[in-house]
Image (cartoon, rainbow, N blue to C red; front, side, top):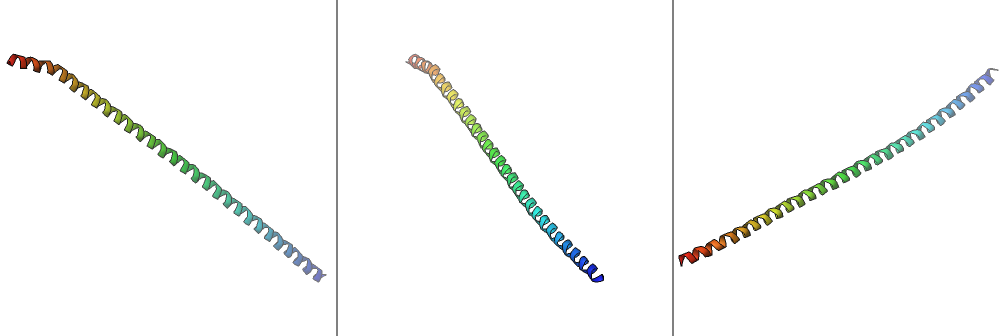
Length: 105
């Protein structure tokens, strides 16, 4: 009877070890899956961040380009006004010069 009890105890311990091993494998698998999910989430996050930075860079570039165009436009406008003023000044001073020239004669 005592031998049967020892045998039953060993069988119970084997079942327990088997159960523990299965549990450990399952945990290992869950861990591996969690790590994979984390890696995927991190990659997705990194991609979103990169995408956002790319968009911000493009927007900054666009703003700079617009600013440059505005400056160029303002500069051209300024030059046009100066040239008009110079032409106007030349037109108004021309007759005076010829009138002076005639008076001198």
